[in-house]
View (cartoon, rainbow, N blue to C red):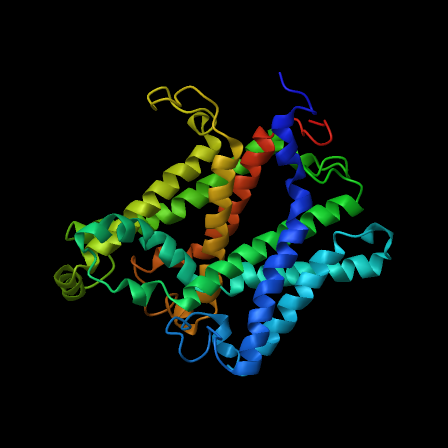
Length: 358
């Protein structure tokens, strides 16, 4: 049995302290780049030259306003992250509330507004692009896919998550709770393992059903069944190969749905015996929680862009079909998956190596 002072736990227990300086450095770097774009008039990724702004809320921001706006927000967030490394516990409550509110707002902007649907789309197509590259399939120009705007979107997600980690650790510290696990603050019955097991099953079920419903339509098209679409459109997709791209997305969604169910199944806590080398061993908590959280963030970002598009709401009217029905469920997918991942964390977290509680 390991103890709190076991060297194997020291790196893990220090991670919450590193979020603030990492966030300050990352946001400061991109803030300077935004400032350079403001001065030079070049390099802003979300202007009219970005072909993927159709569903993004950033399409509402004029290209000449975007660079100075991002420069101010990012540099301000970098300063806020640095302030969280100081003795801010002695600051007044209104000041702490203002600092936390600003940091959470910028974190949400970076993590779920800037990425829009492009990050999720790339995650969905990545397996096909990687596996098919040696064989020249799909026949695409990779330079048209891996663009500067896409890189900035992924960088925004990184910055948003780092800032979220920094403000969460800071709020725990100022509330007198453990920075590493959050224990020690006000009691919350819904965070007990038994309670998390109850509401976590509902969250996981919802989060698994939505991508599986999406996959069913794509599998039907690959089988030649025009589920929710016309026969002519299906024939067109069969001719240009898009039906197989949809099949790949459906397979990716199905794998995600099965892994989501693992958050509430025994095999999600201990590797099945038939798994080579790992069979019978406990599943590391982070191996399940981190990917699920990242996908939840990506799905939420994609959903925000969808619901902000007037075409999305047309799916509830005359354009409703079995093909569009799964899309209407997407607003619940990201929050449900995030809740399922958090419930899994609450059920399986061990004693904290930092405070010894649990």
